Image 1: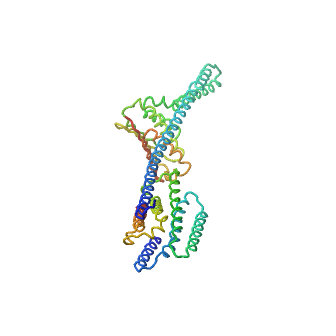
Image 2: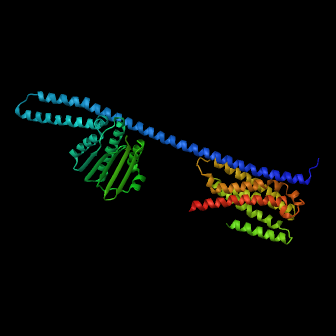
Amino acid sequence: MQISSKELILLIAIITFIFLIAPLFLIIYIFLYNKKKAKHLEEKEILKKAFELELLKSQVEVQEHILQTIAADLHDNIGQLLSLTSMTLSSIKADHLREEKINTAAELTHRAIKELRQLSKKMNGQELIKKSLGHAIAYELDWLKKGLAYEILFTDNTTHSISAHASKELIMFRLFQEILSNIIKHAQATRIKITIDQTKDVLALFVQDNGKGFILEEKLKASDGLGLTNLQKRTLMMDGNFTINSITGTGTEIQISIPYQ
Amino acid sequence: MLYLLMVCLVEMVGISLRLEHKPNYALYTWFLVIECTMISCFFYHLYRKYHHKPSQLYSWLGLFISVFLLELFTNHFSNFAYKTAAFMSVVFVIASLYYYVLILKDEHFRKLETYPPFWIVNGVLFFYFGSTACNVFFDYLLQEKARSLSLSTRYVTFNILNVLLYSCWSYAFICRYRQRN
């Protein structure tokens, strides 16, 4: 059977049409695949973030546990030993000259016991936070006032504590300790202003110093900006906001706010 | 841009030659070299991101020139080099498909709706895949007894393919322009 020229032309037109339809379907397939890829990448990113948060949570928990263990050890073991030493010293009966030295030693031991108890309490965050975040911060600031000459202004505007958020308060307290440690180590400040505010559903911590300040972008790029990143990550872990403003020669302001309802 | 200007010039010269009833196959035959070089360089530019070597481009262009010259010497420069055009079409279709494979394999996500290289490749694929039938049956279509040249199957097909190709390319240029601003 011979194919007529008309049929052949029709055949060529159909082939061309099919050859145009085929790339169209191929392109549609690539679009759909690409959309799936986008969804997959999005899920991967969410999982990665969730994993990082879990890791950070575990780190915080482990750190807290270690601090508690050390605090308990200090209080129970070394504290007991010092108490025993104090008792032993007070039971010694000696002549006038030696009695004075023994009394001095007993007094030093008393002071050591007192310092040790304060340190142990400071380390045991959960114990400290039991009353309130404001109380824990005030305790920390008392400790600071003893050793270093800073003008400290502390305002506690909290109204009530929510026991369900004790872990959040503890993380907030640890963040405060880190910020304070950074100020002491690097800022060369003379005045520190701390404010905690509580609204209906937000708990906010505001720390301001009059130190030498820094350029935030440079700090974040440099390896020593890791502390700031950690502060930021731990705030994000509580679904909070972390803002930092620093002006060279003027000082630094840090604000941490977390959902609290 | 220069290539598109050359396309316009070649088309205008081709039409004017046709109106003067002079053969224009020589013009389109030699333009094949420019067309092939341009599209090959474009594909090389796309593949370069995926660590392809320039030697592959030179090898392909060398092979194309050999086939092209062989066909010209075989038909004594008396006809359009349609076999070379068909061969080139097949290679560009494979190159387009290979680019899709690279996109699918790439872990980096791109928004393809507004990705200019993707739309340029789409245009190339539509044009060269769609023109395969016309290239294969080129000899037969030359003898087609249509009422006029503008109603011949080949002419109509290539007009549709040109519209598709340049629509895709125009869209790609618009996307690129928007991204730049």
